[in-house]
Image (tube, rainbow, N blue to C red; front, side, top):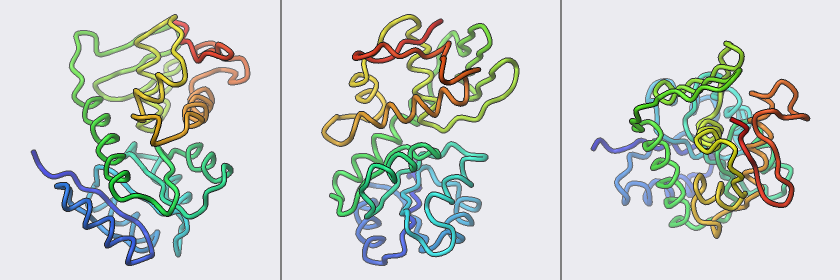
Length: 230
């Protein structure tokens, strides 16, 4: 299998070197960028499989880069930042980030997160089932092309939003608790926060629901989790 390319965007040379060494030792190709403009150019020229993106960067910051990339790509994006408050974490996930990891971080855990996101991305891309389209009134999910149509209009979802929608839609009318969703899409609970699920559900509703405050597709079962109404 061709080695997967990971773009590391950070203006601290020591951080870039540390991540690069650990990625290379695990069989990945590490691409490095030290500013926002260079990062956008490298995405265009090298088409990486995943991006590790620092928030505080010269030029466009990490959040601005993510917003720009989400206009036309669903590459998994892992934010890496010394900013550890909930406001920044929620913002990062809301604009399309797949995960938010705070500095200082464990290189081993970071590589494990990279592998987990890539594994899920590969599984989603390689899914071959008899029914490659999930169709519901007003909503169509194409598993082959990774496209979503709401009332015959295309809706762009990030990779994680698409994975979350597919997981829910494949289990119509079943209540799935938050912990199960987190473990399926973000791996072990010890590595993260289940509030991540809530943020992604909120983002998803804004994109597929006629009225996100009164959702028709994804309903909250208070104190338990979520149910997709199929």
